[in-house]
Image 1 (cartoon, rainbow, N blue to C red):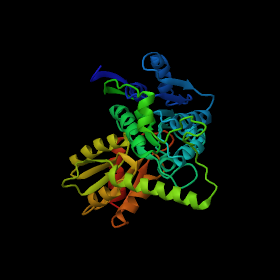
Image 2: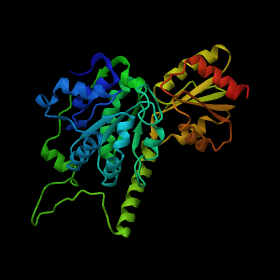
Image 3: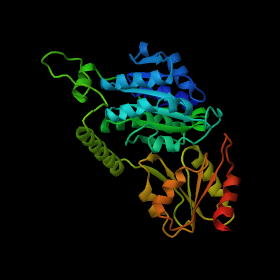
Length: 361
């Protein structure tokens, strides 16, 4: 149904979006706080309606390698997990990037390190944006702040992975995955036929034998000169992504004296803090990075002009702040405020941090 409005959790919304955006396969493994993705897909049974394959693998490692195999055939495939599970997937993600394949990964972050807590976190920022696996590669990283964006980014992620033949990650914190909001689900899109896949993905594994051309999918290249050529090809793709796909949101920048930078659900808390600060005569604007990679460095540099200071707010010990400092070249004070262990800051705590760390420092 076109424009269907409903109330659901972020994780549930991802499952509905995967079906409606015409994904061919989902391969996953349960782990809190993202298990509802797999549970919802199993309840909806899309294999009976659209032909979408849904499989609970025996482990996270198995799941990401099933994604690797599905992507190699040109199919639209995805997986989801939470922080420790995504750590287990890193080798497979690196292989997918090295083989130049499209795939979508959802990470609903929980606290760490180690098994940590099942409560929300944003401490996987480094893992997602700096390449958690080995080698010189990047993921397109989308950071939703609403349940609606959880839906929309499934479609956007699918589009971008096929456009650039590179994996993308939806990096959501546990708050967005678990909270319920009104969403508008997209109209059902048909899955591509095998003939459409062959036409749109001429690079895909085709199973041909004998004298006919056979596509071999691999991330292995034993000749150093050829491996360098592949790396140059990847870097050219990443440069194009940086030029064309950087996304961010600006809130209340006009006339502001201070800048708050936050992503995901924390940006919503910061928006309330911005309103509370205004009542005290403190004028603060917000930049919310939507793509964590590519990072909106130029937008932040421009927004920082004339500002008295920047407060970076995260559910971690300070990770995105490194990219913010690089963006503004340390020309103005950049301070961090974060909570860890699954503790969510209140708007008042953010206002207090802005006054203590920036205004009265």
